Image 1 (cartoon, rainbow, N blue to C red):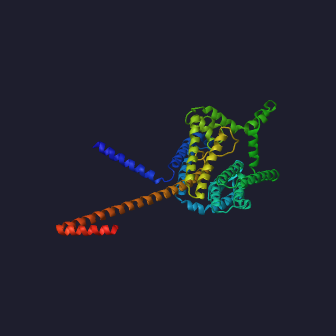
Image 2: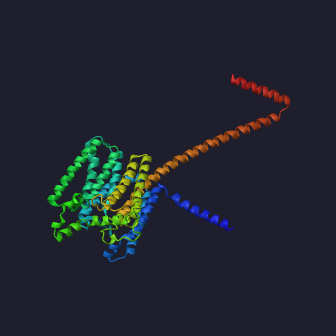
Image 3: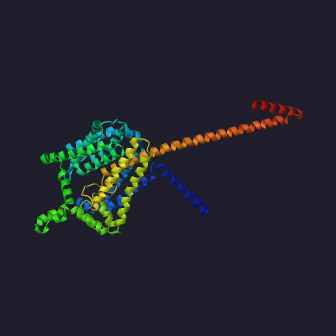
Length: 462
């Protein structure tokens, strides 16, 4: 009896689990990766937010609860975007770009300045970063433009593709040079993979180089891009030879200024080295107390310090695995729009993650990019969640279309099976009636009937 009750209980649990899984349409691996990254974020933010808690006079637990709220909001945003059919993203692609441009312009006029960068906008008491929304809007517009617009000359390519994207990138440049260059790189990758003529791309690269030179000149004359100097200094510090600086001839003030300039990279390098292969263990980071922004810009170095090289590789492989699943979705898409959106948003997340990782391990200059779905943040987390949701919507629609095809094939197969069964039953009934008819005849009548029947069949065959 007890064993029977246990089997019934296990059966009920299995049905509930099957029900939950069956409701998650789309790529199941991407669902799993989203939840894994979110859980990693919750555990790391609690460990890495000690310095932030001290500065704000708060506690790690309060910041943890804030991140949990972001995770819940991100999950809600993902589910909403996941339920919206791709056709609505196609319809709203142009509007999303116009809205992104409007928000970016409004940020220049009435934005909130933080860390010498005017990137934030407050509307209705809610503070957010329009740049994060612009990343998604640019990909949606590119996908729609390449699907429907006729681009047969370089002039039309400039007007329909380069100009709108260029305007967005210039507006982003005011708040973040690295974000603008990063989105320009994403757009170039999308255009190249979409099959745009390579001659158009080469001309655009030359035009872009000229535009960047002009912007640098304008900034040197009028100071229109506040973050330009910061970006140039970071590149100089990264590319210059360490032996150039003769510390013996420096006074204490100059040496301190040099140390301050390289503080972020130096502290991150120490965190990576101390992590070694196995790490110090969860919550045992020491660099979180001295490393600037260990909960956002440098959270990957905290991952390596606490969980070692294997932990860092595991997190990196989650992003690689996610992008691989996006590539599989692209291969199965039947429309240009769906393929570009799935691949483009996958590239946005993947490239941002790789930039963050390369900066943290000292292979790339400081950029300030967060680690998607892991770093502390509201706008970034929610917008990345939306990107996940849009990709899952495309995957779900593809899955639903395949399910419809399979259902149609199943119904057709059942219909053919039913027709064969009816034909067989009809033949059996006719044979039974024929036998009953013959059984009711006398021998003489049966012989005459059979001779007549076979004579009619022979005549029909001739």
